[in-house]
Length: 181
Image 1: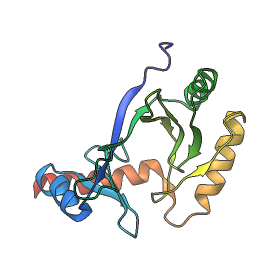
Image 2: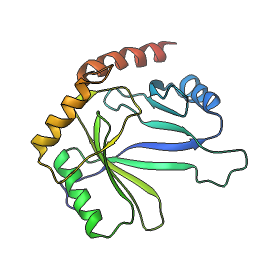
Image 3: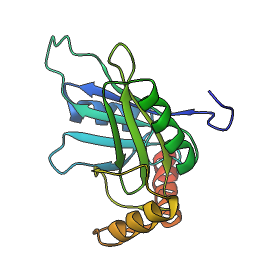
Image 4: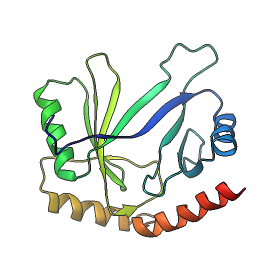
């Protein structure tokens, strides 16, 4: 893979049986802070780093004794929208069976499966924050300018919108308070 992509492992999503129990473990034992969560409790985003909206994602989806894989997805930050577009072209050329380009408001992503069906995400951050979970399909053949303009307009229309730097300042305070507790 070209050096300019240099994927950095960013976060891991895991399927869990008992979301409240897992939330308590990750917050009370490991010191993570909940950065967002679905109102219905099906997904929780957690971080210990204000530069990362989430480092661990807990996803309700395992039952007792379930043989479902533990890993929901493995995600890599590739730094720029241009690199996300490069990955998109590479996985299309490689003939990946499942390719899903999405915008989360706070990130542009391309999801795909490896040859054994493991879900991979390659993404870059946007300059905006909107509450998660959120996702909609995007066209990675559009220009960077179009994608920036469309994403910003969408984000500004959502409740809870703020510049990412403002969100990072707020989550930094929560992380510091968690570390002092």
